[in-house]
Image (cartoon, rainbow, N blue to C red):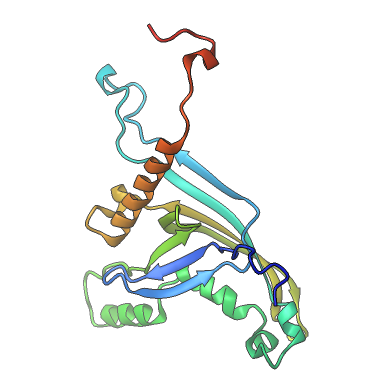
Amino acid sequence: MSTFPNSPRLIKGGIVLISADTAAVQRIIPLQYNPDTLSRTLQVQSVGEGSDRSEALRLKGPPVETIKVDAEIDVTDQLEFPDQNPNAAKLGLHPQLAALETIIYPTSAQLISNNSLAQAGTLEIAPMESSLTLFIWSKNRIMPVRITDFSVTEEAFDPLLNPIRAKVSLGMRVLSVTDLGFQHKGGSLYMAYQQQKEKLAAMSAGGAFSTLGIPGIS
């Protein structure tokens, strides 16, 4: 029994893959440990420098938001109980790493299919479509993303050279309605994300001109 039965349940960040066509959930990948930091960059989509003065305050669309997280994965504790964790004992971190890495791979079935089309003389072969990737960081941040950068540092190995401790660095670009359109499932999820941001902004207490040391704007 827990020493603190009323302690809050730890919510984890993670990645969810859904079908871009049917919106069916294909895989849920919770992060083993929540990263200590999450860095975000927003690039303003203004009309541009040197444009007509009437365009100075206009925006072309939502800002381009990029996210960077560094996550740790460790199966050291699981190796102490190999009967309860047979995959960890036999494979180390390979399954967890593969679940993350295959997000950015086309499936082997897609590769084989496109190769068959090429062998049959098909003149135009459409690029392979991936699943829609969602980065979830609490109920307030559910974002459709494209993984733009992925690196792994494996730090410890078992006697069979299976990795047992690693750090995964993920770079992601939030996909907005500019990228996906309003009819796409990812577009509707993005709009919910932005609308939630607007609701949170409305909850922020406003200031007063006196705080800024001025009587007002004339």
